[in-house]
Length: 421
Image 1: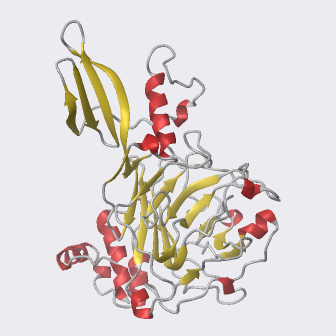
Image 2: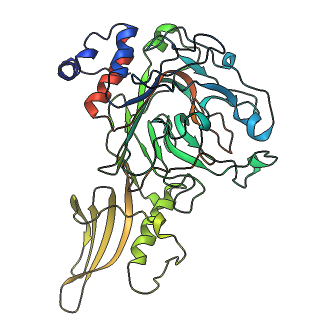
Image 3: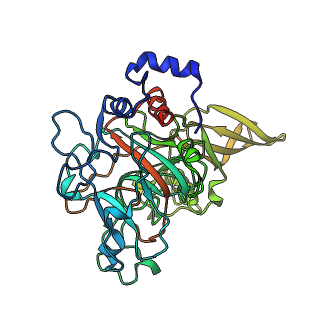
């Protein structure tokens, strides 16, 4: 992974002295558990002392819920196909940033999609159940990506109610129960991808949730048969933050977010729905029914980030009576076409969205707050979804959840723990 320059690391250590000597596993664990706002941290070393010996989370002092992880094959649970999953389906590395790591394998059996989860009944209304108004969060996962680009960790049950070929024969139908999820891709494989949902289901009349951001950097795919020294040098720190005060959803890889834009979103299969949500919001604000306006488009699904004052303006073309400019705002790039009116003044005749900012992403909503009967589990390695694809494969050496948006400096400290092997 990318190393932090020595001068930057020394600066960080002035603020986080507990990370200064993070050359042992115990000190690395303490660096995470001492970070303010920690809700739960699975290092895959801490286990139940007896019984099933399930993985437990490090939790704040005084907390009683240690969020034991159950092994489940969600295809068995929802389609009644395949076999049950057990801890033997998650091979252990024997080392990692915090002393151990689990392997999410590239399963060949289409009826076998194992994951580790905290069931809803054991997390509902606990600190891990981050939801509702005024809530911020951070999710961090230390991982080595072998292939794929789907979920790493979060409360992100995508639903099994979609009318698709994959849902034929479904035995247990449930709508989407998404809250927050950290992915190793989605849109762009290998990026850290941050996902939030305000309704548990789809966004912008899309079947799927579209509020997501992608880090500028991409984690490489590391071959599964790589020697130990290559694996030990390949740890990546994936993270997502949501700051409810700024409405910013940000994806981070190795402590760096980056400014990512996507041009011509209307030409992209998934982002075209965000483009339409932007367009419908602008059309609705004009008097009368406009060409291209869908009067049935729900107002709560408009996507209209602030566009009061442009950050920059570039001229695409200009003649005596016509001018085309691109105005860049905080989260959008809008092409504005103006013509001179009868009095010789410029008058806007067309606005078109030509760029969307993917990192950070503007998210003006609360996090979905389901009741106990309609909430999803917290899952690691995979999430429940209708497509039943393999998703991410590789090693996961730790997962941490915080109930606030960590700063860039704090995320760099956590990313540096990858280098303590």
